[in-house]
Length: 319
Image (cartoon, rainbow, N blue to C red; front, side, top):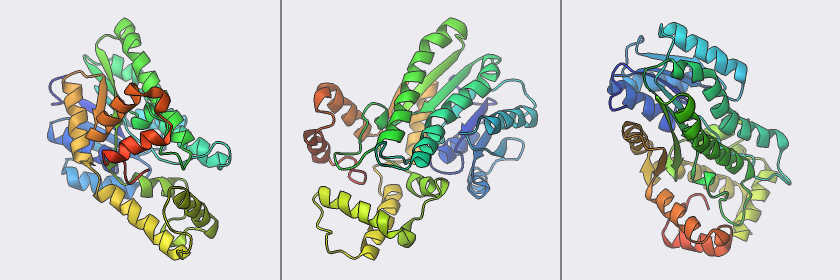
């Protein structure tokens, strides 16, 4: 798909981050876009930044973890864009959370897994017929470096998000053969970003209904303190409010000091569609981590791997 002019694109999670940038860049390339998000306020800002006419860009409230809402989103898209087909499906929406399977909150674990995996599954189920009905189509599913490395270091569990992203990667890779056999005019790509400057930290807390910043409960501060101590940080006598502020600063830095911007990531994704690349690593950190894990798979979850990653100055805001 060398041109997006007059193509019909669907973007989930279009209110912030890579989703917002995908919407803006697709509109600039001449596409008709339908975006969904759980926040109307965020989508309004995306619309302002995209500067698109209403007929070219529609917005839809949708929780992608709920199939009934995804099906409603699909019906609205086809009706409002007066079409029976779409050309591009970007299953981009995601949140972080559900770290520990052993001791963590089950509702948070399942909510994170549902958004990150079932959002992709429901999106593909809902829009598959419309993609097959097109002259040419492309599915882009967002996984993560955590789709091939299920870790955020040796001091914190990371099970729900990693499990979901592994599922997205495996599903998309399996789709390659499925589509070649049954819908050869439809392509697919799996995107595996490293650290991208987005608001996923703040947005995840909102979606999960968790307190953030100075409102963080004392028991959660205690958990964070233990994790910091295990990582060698001297926070034993640091007041709780200082740790709360550190977490707030880290969330802000995750967005503003990332090595790769959301705009750059989205540009890489769209170039991959144009060039029909099925495997899309984004960021030097993603490329390096992919190499490190392939070179020493048995070392992937040992401290020695974290040392290698730290030597390259990658993922410092996450580990």
